[in-house]
Length: 147
Image 1 (cartoon, rainbow, N blue to C red):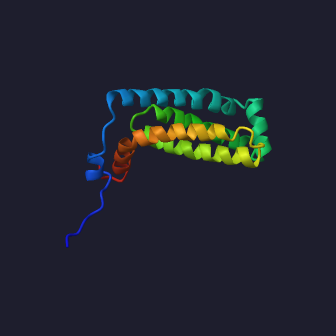
Image 2 (cartoon, rainbow, N blue to C red):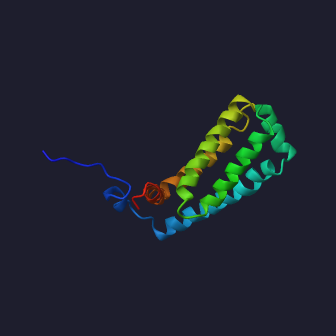
Image 3 (cartoon, one colour):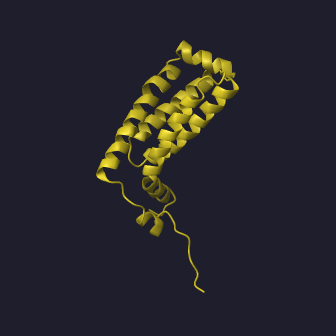
């Protein structure tokens, strides 16, 4: 019997991850830019300036202004990180978490009228996270001191 070792972020699994074609890479970059613009302007913007439409929603949830500013800050940070190559995969994963919270808030507190909107964005973010998984693995390896 021979012993096998699991693949690590710097091992064979990362080296054999298929590279995106030029067309696919361009498409993913376009998606990242569109998502970044969405999260920065119509999503984070109203929360960070305290617009009444955002404040009403967060008051209905019961967390108030501090949570509105926190979510707006997370969305803006995620939007910026989506267009930084080394951070784009991690940003997509983090924003999927934010969208998960948005689904829960929509269903539990806001009447579930538009519950599907954050789901659609989470799926688009999952496409980015999947396409940028090699970058995410390299970042994790670098943070752990192995890269």
